Length: 329
Image (tube, rainbow, N blue to C red; front, side, top):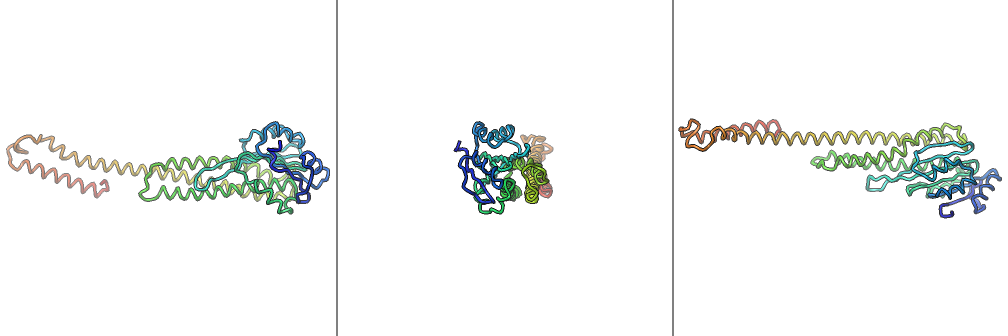
């Protein structure tokens, strides 16, 4: 049981205080004092482990099922006097276009906050320590932690999207670089679009839950937290706009790349056709006369053979100049 608990602490007036080590006793003490709350952090708990915690915290069974199963769509659920929120986290491996994902589930009630983390791409590792240095934030209670977690997740979105925009600039430069071979470009663009799909699955569905929180009326969320939640919602909207813009740009780059390939193929076909025409002229003339008798073109005329050779050379030269002028060669 202790292996899944990353940290469990009681906060009074924004400061971490000594309290019962058992989370059940800590929650009871926080509720009795009226000015404290408990923040417990869990990492990939099993169903049995989370059931034990849910009995003490009074969590809804459906929310518990979502928290254990993970792979949830970002959402917000209100259960009487508590909230459940699911968020997807994303990370970006520097030097690559790869985007990794994780999940954070948040339970917030009258005197507690419980965060359940899945995966390694989580901004929570340093968030608690950061907030403990700012008691003026923590003294607002569970909704301050809820806002801080959402803000940290969205800030990570901004970092990843900014990194992807830099990668996209490099991809665009490669596509339009003069003399750049077209091979593999379509595969790179498709791979990039797949990464954007991963990002959109995290950022897009979260917009509606964030707007609900920012509008107020949800359990736990106090009126003084609404401006900060609206700020997070605005940042998330900006992220979604950036992702949408990158997706449109990728589509344009793909179309431009395909157009380049088509133009190059047409150019190659013109060259092949031009050379075929140049080869066809002497072949046609030679085929007419057979080139297997003494004199040509009127059989016994001595100038016939060199005359035919001059004719072949003249026609080929004229065709070559015409094709060259038309950029077919």
